[in-house]
Length: 345
Image (cartoon, rainbow, N blue to C red; front, side, top):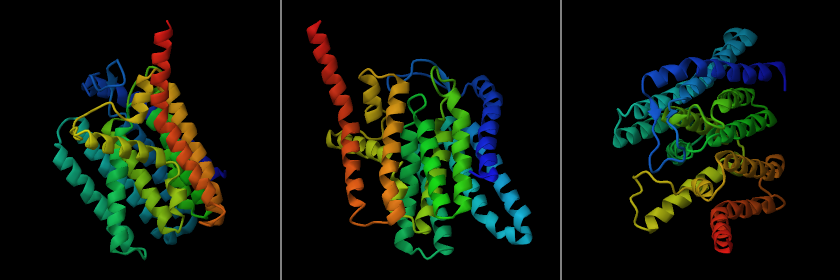
């Protein structure tokens, strides 16, 4: 890791940590707290909207990236700040939608419309500056809305979303470095650093959750980086490696609820990670287990990153199925073991 990358990573973490100390008391004083309910995985009132601090960390680090580019390249560096600036605008626009939701001032229909409009605008911008067609534009928009909401759905356990963000952003930074895209590497490190700065406040007896503000912003950042990597020719398998478990959890839960005739718009506690926690694992163990699975998925994607999609890399992709099955079946095994233990006592 060179000096520039280290400065971005550490700087984002430091700014986020300082922002937490300033923002959290203000949020609590304003009554922006998550009160436990029947659908909650926690038992204490906790500050929500903690994503504001992460946004501050990402913002400062991204601005440093842009200033660094201009300093190194002079007037020719102006063109290189457009994508980092777009990255920053997208994340804050989605965070604003999430903030309105945290303040209970935005209806679900308005929230969804805002998400779709932002995803289409970003996708159209990417299509204009690349060779992507209308089909890709629509696919990008669907990916954007899906990613933002998926991240929002998994912000329920202490450390879960923050740890996943660190792994995902770290992987994207590694891939960006591998393909020689310095801007992708630095922006991904800004996201990873911000999550690192937030994580200590989200572990144990968590002092705050990301809230919709943070989960929407992180989802948007991951979406932007994923699309950027795709446009640069990175195989899809490599891009989705750290995201596959989040998508699988949300997708499977949605399908099962539809199959049972449940209202998918109502809050619930039926995600795989929530059922693992309900079966007896503490928050930290569930988060760590999910993080390990994501890391394994990334490791399995390394052959594809190196050699592309070839016959020799397919077995690694198949191994994902084993990991996904392990993740999906774990809550069932834990419940069965608990029942056997209760029957034997």
